[in-house]
Length: 220
Image (cartoon, rainbow, N blue to C red):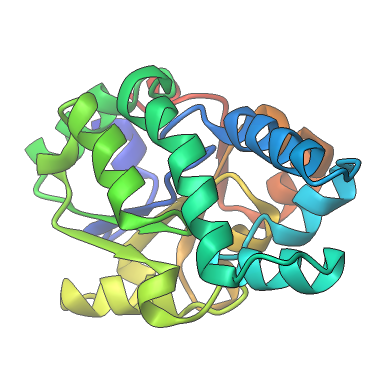
């Protein structure tokens, strides 16, 4: 771990995405989407996931309602999704390999730790508490709270500011290309995290990110 931090001068903070980065959950959302579409007589296509990947739940609900002319309100759609996801986040979703050990090492090196997620706060806290890692985070923020998605750097900048740090003092860990691009352009040190659902963008992520990891054991 000491060697990992030595690669990046003056790092004092680390900001993590949740789904696909810290937890192995992206296929869960794909299954939820397929089930949701089927119940509405619609056919799920992979292009849908590509269109919504960087958005928060409220934005996704708006996009889905408008694109597929659904009768439910945006609030009702979000509620349906949260109900479908609740059991997964409370009981089934696992951490990516090495996550807990890596968070422990960051803490031992006095690194401030933030969570920047497109997920809901309730689901995020459910999975963090299940794996007993919620206490590692000094700041947890969702895009829904800021009314932006990850095409905006606001969520990363807000967390860095809460730590009294500038972007160049913070690592940002993301599995999606849009998150890596946004954080990089805002001046953060970016770490691409491999995930099955973003393998089609692996080459682009590796070209943009300061570092690319297959799992968190490689950082120890």
